Image (cartoon, rainbow, N blue to C red):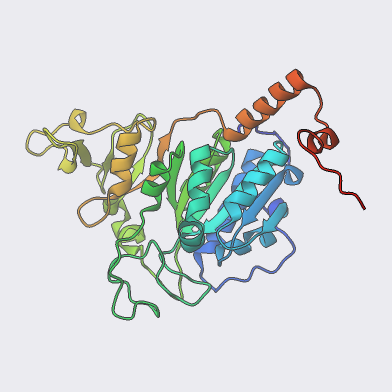
Amino acid sequence: MTATINRENVNAKDFASDQEVRWCPGCGDYAVLKAVQRALAELGAEKEKTVFISGIGCSSRFPYYLSTYGFHTIHGRAPAVATGVKLANPELDVWVVTGDGDGLSIGGNHTLHTLRRNVDLQILLFNNEIYGLTKGQYSPTSRRGTRSPSTPYGSVELPVIPAEFALGAGARFVARSVDSQQSHLCEILKRARQHRGASFVEIYQNCVVFNDRTFSRFTDKNVAADNQLLVEHGKPLLFGQDRRRGLRMKSGCLEIEVVTVGENGVTESDVLVHDETNRNLAALLASLDTPDFPVALGVLYCNPAVPYDEEVRAQVEAARSKAGEPDLNALLRRGQTWTIAG
């Protein structure tokens, strides 16, 4: 949704409901909630035109904690309900809050088709690589070897990479951030809101009870600079404490390698420049992980197209202008009908 309304004296607290926030102490969801409230305030969002729709899971308590419209739906179906809301009332700014289990397991089909259709809404997928609400079973994003009540000897499955999934589904906006990186997360949320069409934001979120520090390999302060790549459109893909490490394409193949500027004749001009309109580059960035590569954060892909709901409305208006106002009674009686004698 692109329209931004300038409203004076609006702050994050205006978007906080009167409900007691009930997540485990230290849960990353608190930080995400704070970032969302801040982003809404900075965007000048109108509470009466904003709706948050969730499925089932820890993250899905979100609608209770925001002073906006909200709908806590059923497991995995939040994208489908959100699509209906947007089609019925296009003036609403619709946000979907889901988790890696809710959105990529039972709800994977609904998430896929919402992205494929390019419905004008924002999907926030909280990824903690575990089922938190149901006490720690492994999820679609859990890494191989994850020990849990449902995988006591370690998971043998390859995990879903949410950003790769979204790109494969045809998403036109794919981004990543981290719950604890407030400024970065807030900016990503604002970018998602300003995008026309479906926006997919994966948020690395820590579950302190069942999967604590699963992202510490790239989120801890002492390793973040070397293991995070903050991508920005039009800027070289550099990272590291001194920003001398970078990514370049390997000669003769479609693979990325890490190089150091100033070593072996490598200059900054050899480093790839981020182009957020390049889906192939986005897919490569989405696949990177430690220890061989940094984890890419930011807007990986942004290439807008006409939203699904806008095209549906245009189609309806064209039909109405050609055939006139619809008559449900006439429609029901059109064609073959029977009269049942009493």
